[in-house]
Amino acid sequence: MSMSDPCSEWVFLIVLSASPINHAVIAPSRPRCEFCDTVGTKRLRSISPEVAKNVRTVRDQIADAAKGCGRDPGEVHLIAVSKTKPADLIRAAFAAGVTDFGENYLQEAIPKINSLRDLSATWHFIGAIQSNKTRLIAENFQWVHTVSAEKTARRLSNQCPADKTLDVCLQVNIDQDPGKAGLAADQVGSLLQILGALPRLRARGLMTILQQNSNPEDGYQRLATLWEGLRKNAGPHWDTLSMGMSGDFQAAISAGATHVRIGTAVFGDRN
Image (tube, rainbow, N blue to C red; front, side, top):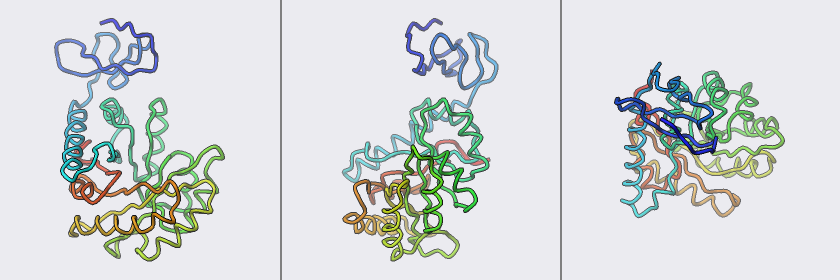
């Protein structure tokens, strides 16, 4: 199969041979499949065909949930949570149109980010933040969703590269779960004020992780109410509600989520 498009930046999905296996080739000058090491018509290693199908299903579900509550589906951003998943599956999700990926574990995330530098992906850190890891987070991620302490915020700002600004969300323990990190609702305002004075951080909104047995409609609505109440003094970039996962993202969208963090429904069960 020949491809005449001269653009070397576009990713083309093609089918080689009669079997319905998708391959991604970056321009005629680089005929190697970026996913499965196929060269020309010789197949060496295929990828799971399920990821693209899962992405389409999840996007349809997001659109249905948004339309069901009178929202524009374009207001809801999918973050594919790729923790424990290999780089080739992230490439598959990217080829299916996903551009935002969430990682929890820094020691696992950094090698994947480095191996995927050729993708114009946006990386979201969504795990617990250790003080001695803030430099690596600031250097390698564009978003941090789990800021809940002044010390962490100051370290991220001080260690962020000079040509970069980190988008951050404040993590709120909206259920007051003693086993989870996050601010109490009445602590958010004071930390938000501190963030406003940190030059390398941009406060974007709030994030939460609910208890397994909590009512998602209630929990997400309480976070949305808190977020709305802070809007007046939060600054011009206050536009993000990061809430909702594979099992409850429809309820989060109904409450106003702008970013849903979905792993299992995109990539399958964790290894």
